[in-house]
Picture 1 (cartoon, rainbow, N blue to C red):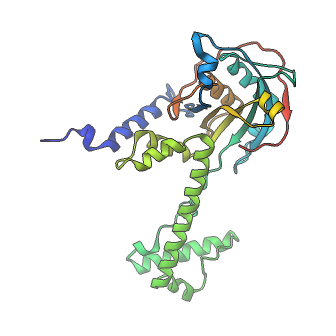
Picture 2: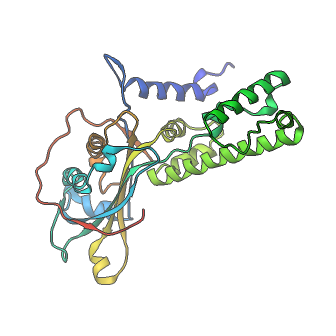
Picture 3: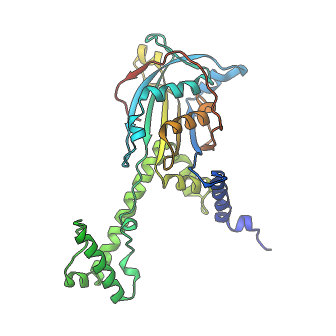
Length: 320
């Protein structure tokens, strides 16, 4: 019996989904910044039912707690110059949709919401940056010698020291012996490990871990995993909200996390301040709720505006 293309080639199915996501970001003038927002929300057992039970959301008050800022590895002046108070004001409008309201009362607030924000750091392969490939895969010694010599001369002109590039002719010949080939392979493996470590760290920060683990365990991989890997390949703006039981913190000195929401979107081509608005609009419907894995949403064209009172921010160091 002939297998259907759907089951025989799951990779093609994922490719179509990813292409569809890309085309969704195209306007009349062609490609534009990808403004899809990845959303991951969690709640403590029983909290969602207590907060949103009986068909009506319960009003709760909160204080913002200024968390950690992640500056990334690429200079982003808009990100650096955006004050946390502005981020807090934007988030407050989204939180109000789920009946969370700011308060200035340091004794009676229901929640303490810690906010971490910034941009991820993506480790780019040194081999890819330098245009290098494994030496063991080349058969033409003369071509290899010329490639290494040209590259070494470029390094010398740029006054960039690379301990793995030798300028002497004898040293160039040494690149062709088996030991050197093994050494080069080891360097590439270390380089790949560095990238994987960076990707894993970002996956934890953005809330992608569970979905990526499902993808790893699936023999053919998953479309969700393919999509998230493509997202991790680029730097991403993010906002992480961690809502703690403030009364338990005050009275019992216990850190009880009631809910968390992790929002992120691609940073290349995106203005950070506009990005915070996009992330808040896309994630406002899940504050205090639980999502089944990572959800990818497009923000509305015209974010709704909600007038709220003054937002108080407590500035103290914290970690995600």
